[in-house]
Image (cartoon, rainbow, N blue to C red; front, side, top):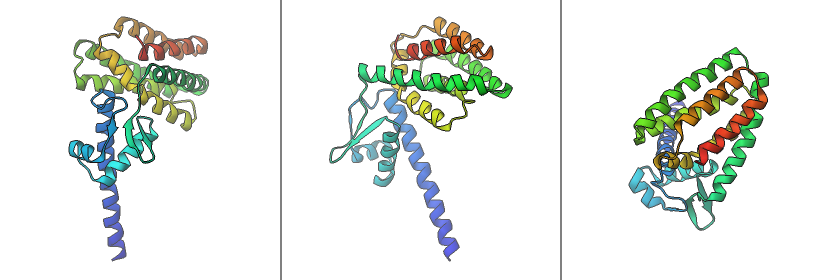
Amino acid sequence: MRIWNEMIFSGKKNEDSTIVELLASSLRKDIAFGTLLPDQKLKLNELRSRYGGSNHSMRETLRILSSEGLVEGAAQRGFRVTSATEDDLRDIQLVRQEIESIALSRAIALGDVAWEGQVVAAHHALQKAEAAVATTPDDLTALEWDDACRAFATALIAACDSPRLIDLQRKFFDQSRRFRLALLREGKLNWAARKARQKALLDAVLDRDEITALALLKEEIEADLKA
């Protein structure tokens, strides 16, 4: 009986985790696309009506998004979408440049041939995604493009041998999604310049030219957030 109860509990736990993951993915998407606006209050009943889930699963979802910096919670005041001001943008850009520069420097020093292959593959996928979204910027294609941007940024630092650096990079990259997607919606991305810069960054990484690679990385992050 005890084993059966543990199996039921484990199954319920896995089901709850899956629901929270789905809820978190939906809210992340709507925050990124501006469906949920900066500073908007997030009320449990309204969120449940819109996305489903229980009070418990929605609270857990908001806790996860809060840890990612996409949502803010205050005692007695509930949750709200994190602000997206010019100061927020500059701060995210600064932190991304610092973290990713440290991680890329380590990756260039430590990366092997397998890592180089990972970077080449991610760059190839990104170029295909950029070509697609430049001509068909619908929501699905934009999400696929955003995923490709994330995959390339992640591949660049994958060999840095620091799980914490990788985790920080992921967190702040995700916080920059709204700004990047806003530039896409407003038609402010220079696709030719992005293609040239990304190819130059790839070449510098493969040549283990750290100085050039770091300079291009900072340019890429800046262009990712500001036209």
